[in-house]
Image 1 (spheres, helix red, strand yellow):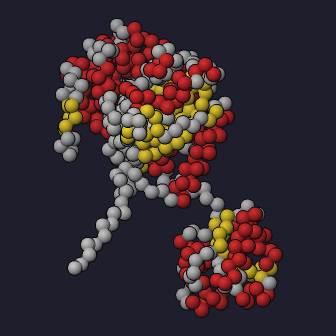
Image 2 (cartoon, helix red, strand yellow):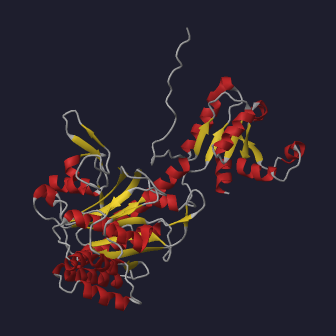
Image 3 (cartoon, helix red, strand yellow):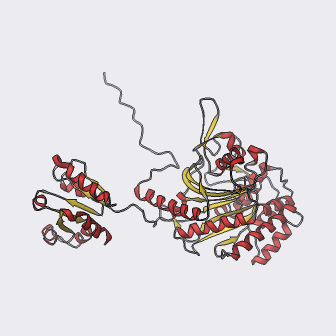
Amino acid sequence: MSKDKPQRPKARLPRGFRDRSGPELASERAMLETIRKVYESYGFDPLETPAFEYTDALGKFLPDVDRPNAGVFSLKDDDEQWMSLRYDLTAPLARHVAANFQHLAKPFRRYATGTVWRNEKPGPGRFREFTQFDADTVGSASPAADAELLMMLCDALEALGLARGSYIVKLNNRKLLDGVLEVAGVALEDAARRGIVLRAIDKLDRLGVQGVQALLCEGRKDESGDFTKGAGLTQEQAHSVLAFVAPDAKDEEEHLNQIAHLIRTSTIGAEGLVDLEAIVKILNANGYGPDRVLFDTGVVRGLDYYTGPVWEAELLFPVKNADGQEVVFGSIASGGRYDDLVARFTGQRVPAAGISIGVSRLLSALKGHKGALAPLVVITSFDKSDAGCALAMAAELRAAGIRAEAYVGTGKMGDQFKYADKRGAALAVVEGPDEKAQGVVTVKDLALGAELAKGVESRAEWTATRQAQISVPRADLVAQVRKLLGG
């Protein structure tokens, strides 16, 4: 009687998740360090919050509707309470501020970086697990707080190598849209309908005017046949909203006149214009003009917790997907003012504003971004019974600040060089019987050797030239490795 075959799981990843290896992780580490230096130079301090929050702490700020697992990954604790992986770094900040409000210096200025998770449909450069880097100012309603965050965002992007003209930060104010909706007859208290409107507008770049108009009215069917219910606005109401976010004005002056007409009877809309004017005045006075921060009514931010100014940073150069096709990449950073978030816990309105850089998305777009791992030196092991010599040389190099490893496998010398090539090593060190008898070591420049080999027709010629390796006294190992790496 034959035994049943063992059931083995497939080696596969869930959709929207991925493995990441050395070069990308090194690039991310370098990017995080660059952003950290900029944030700290502005006087922001670090704060770390846990990956899980109680779901009721996220509350109405879940991305879709008020139930666990709608846009977030959730589970029940052993005490039957729902917990969710954090959706962003802002809601945990609000919880922290509410719990420690009496002990914090106000304004409270913090930065935070970490992984966030979103239970949403993956897309190009859009993952369900990714890294963000935030900075927030809590406890100030001054336009100066908003302007400073925008200035810091520009400085961080430029420190990462994005030249002016290769990115733009778009600035708007949710109060302007509130004014448009109020005049159009959509009550500010109708939170559900306003949420659908905001999410529809947020898709303008991807769906275009017709797609957004469908979502503002009855709804839209996508290419897969799935139907998304709309906000139920009339055609006239939808036209007012589209006139605000996708104006047909021929220039900025006409656009501003259209906005003034759209919000003509709205107090909150007028407040939005005043806020924007104050922020833009500060930005211009400090050299952050429309070549870096630009007024754009199409920016609304989909999350409901934003209460005033909002912003998004976008790349202005083409981005290609894995198939080499140019795609609309979307925002690489965003943020805004969220004066009601802490009040969920305390009942007291606390003004706050923040920025968030999508580190994973930005790395995905900057495919030419070089990894920051230091060059690797591999010490081969000629005599498997005396691996201690190789380990000692590796330790000596590491003590000198050089990234080095001793080969600890069982392969022959040819296999060891193949291993060093696969590891992307810059140099390999050999101490065979001949070298040991002479008191020398041989250092092979693997990158140079690969290039020279392309022009060598025979193994004999390559062996005779030996242009990519050098033998030096054992005592000079560190100095020679430094010289080759420096070159």
